[in-house]
Amino acid sequence: MAAVGAGSGRACRAHPRRARRHARTARLHHRPAQRTVFHDDWVAVCDPDRTPDPPTADDLRRLPWVLVYNSQTASTPAARRLRMLGIEPRVQVVTESFLTVPGLVTGSARIALLPRRLLALPGMREGLHAHPCPVELGQLTRAMWWHPMLTDEPEHRFLRTLIAHAARELDGSGPPPARTREQGHPSAAGRAGGVGVRTWARRPAG
Image (cartoon, rainbow, N blue to C red; front, side):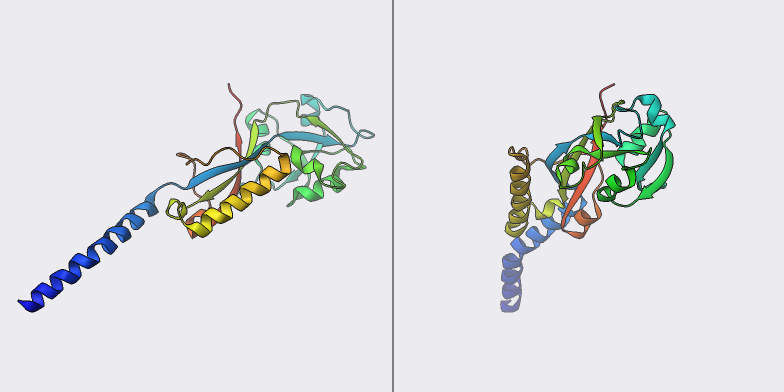
C-alpha cells in the first residue's frame, strides 16, 4: 500500500507538468501568430532619358523589364498581380535582389517595380525617376510571423519588441498593436520556432 500511495503522490505532483506539456503540444497545431511591421507600396522606376516619363499601362506591356525573381516557384507579389491584370512583362533581366535593380535600369529602356521605402537608401534613386504604378497593385505589408507557443516567451517577446522599435525609428510612427493572423500559411522560420519576416500584398478592393 505504501508503494501505491507513493506512486499516486508522484502522479499527482506530475499531473500539472503533464497538463502544461499537453497545452504546449496542442498549440503546435495552431496557425502562426503575426504582427505587422510596416506597410509599403510599389513604384515604377525608369530612366527618364530612355523611357516615357511617367510610364503608362501600355508602357508596362511594351517596355523590357527587370524582374526580381521570375519562376514558377519564386516571384514578387507585384509580378503576380500584373499577370492577374493581363500584363505579361517582357522580361529582359532577372535578378535576385531589389538592391541591384537601379543599376540594371539606369541607362537603359528597361522598367522595374520597387518597394517605395527602398528608394530612401543612398544611391537607389540615382539616374532614375520613380512614379506610382499606372495600374493598381495593392498594398505591400511586411510582418513578423512566429509559432504561437512562443508568444509568451520572454526572449521571443524581447526580439519582437526590438524589431518593432526598429520599424518605429524608420518611419516615426511604429507598427500597430500585436495581433494574431487567422489566415495564411506559416513561414519556414515560424515552423522552426523563430521569427519569420514575411512580405505579402493586399489585393486592392474590387
